[in-house]
Amino acid sequence: MAATQCIQVPVDDTEDVSLDIGNEEEFALRKAKIRHPLATFFHLFFRIGAIVAYLFCDWFSKSFVTCFVTILLLLSFDFWSVKNVTGRLLVGLRWWNQIDEDGRSHWIFEAKKVPSNNSISTEVEARIFWLGLIICPMIWTVFFFSTLFSLKLKWLALVIAGISLQSANLYGYIHCKTGGQQNAGRTASRFLSQQLFQRTL
Image 1 (cartoon, rainbow, N blue to C red):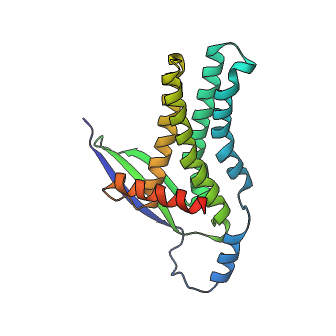
Image 2: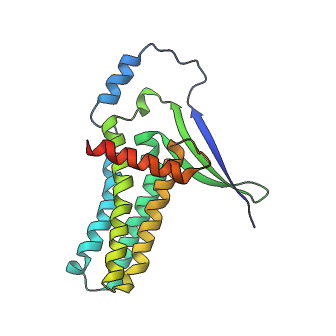
């Protein structure tokens, strides 16, 4: 059985010593509205599209297979784009799994330490990223209980897939943000409560 190991890798784009000169420019860039509009759009498009398709698919198609495949494709596109593109651009975080020569599995969590001016994410983008990342798995959890209680069991596999894919990204990015601490469960719950509290103010 392959052993799994977590590695926290801080990524440094430059080897030069960073100085405080230009902090005003960086602050102004962070206060800008949205610097990555396409990434921000697709961060929300696929996950909201999957939720809307789940709610209203019966209106457009009576075929369960068509609805199932459409929603599953949207969820898969969302998982890939959030994991590989929008997390890196919007908050400077990235995670993935790597298998070494011995067959050991390593989970790698990266947090960009010194962003370049071209890759500085704004506060608005970070807010959109974390809100989308936190709220959508909660919505799929509500769908899970509503599907269970209404006995629409044919949708259960799809809802579980939605929870699994979106929770995996949420867990990975919380791990990146909190520095890969061993007690990830407690840290994750603390981080989630802080994020939700800040967003509601």
